[in-house]
Image (cartoon, rainbow, N blue to C red; front, side, top):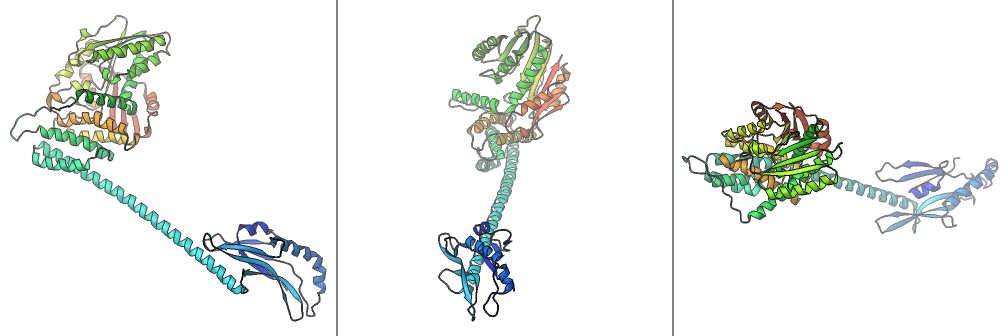
Length: 546
């Protein structure tokens, strides 16, 4: 006769007390982590007369200690019982106990067994059914919770997808409104353009998406252009006159925006990096170098480019001499900056001289530049040459001829790589929209959405360029950016020869220091270094020699 089998359901507490030699853990098929343990306790089988059989008698000594071991394992309070608690709710408990009982037959012979009974109940069948009911209830709750989580996740995913679809649809509608408004302005349809502008102002938000922000700048330009539109049949286009309540306040905002652009956005620093690298190459065979800076304003007020160059020159032996001539109108500010640069240079053993020529690029003459014998001349034009591009082309030709007469050892040219100088307004408008959308997209990746620095950069720096491209004509339009291929043809016609760049590896390493640098690209194209955002060209830098 096989020994009686005992089953109970419990948690990890019983699992830790039952020896693996006598217990087998069987996982329940329900989702709840419930364990079932089955074990056998050796017992003595009674014979018909109530006496002990000979076979059982021989095993008595072997089994008695084993039985006592198991009863001691199940005894939690020195009594022969163990109460197991199960939770109905979080703070309400029902208790079940596992206790040994003696069942006697008619002959008075007893056998030891363990029965699972509910506290306060004598019906073991009711106990088993109640326990199963608990397990079933928890299983249903678990399944219901899973269903709720899945439904919530599906709702969230659907909302995100819908939001993306709505944003895409809003962006497409905004683009269509912009193009339609530009067409109305080009056709001098003031009524239609005014209606479209009112719709655009409600959609083009300064703190919206990247396209909404760039659209807000183009809306300002279209509004300024519409204010100057003359009736059909009128020949010519009026010059925009922008009223400023506080000119000094406006200037301070633009200077602050320029400094933020220099610190955060890489395109000006990229130009200075290429210029300084070219200057250092010239220093390899010279002890004294004279640099004529045609865009000194981009180093104000701290002279970032020259500070970096002085630090690089300090590492070269023997000590070198550097002269810098700045072209511009803010003479006093240039001189203050020059004194600070001289103090820095003296501290590292470099001779630096800063001079200023008051005037603009169009009026510059060769005799304005004080050249010394024995020094190499380098011309640096950082975002300046496009300002002298006019419809007649005569001004740019004169400037290039003057530079050629100076016979520089190197001419560094850095310009925006985009065509914003087309003869037709709509073509220029679409090209600018594409170009500045890439710039605003890069700013979106570099600065948080509600960062005031980004708003200042966009509204007081790039917005000024956009408004000049969109709203101005004739002499007032100075932001006449052109592609690098066009600059290559112009430089060749002026007698310059392209000098191959040798800084591709350094440029890629340099761009890695900027945030969101994975979106920026630096490629070499026909001897020029082109900085781009996600393959869209932004700035092109080239080096030329006579």
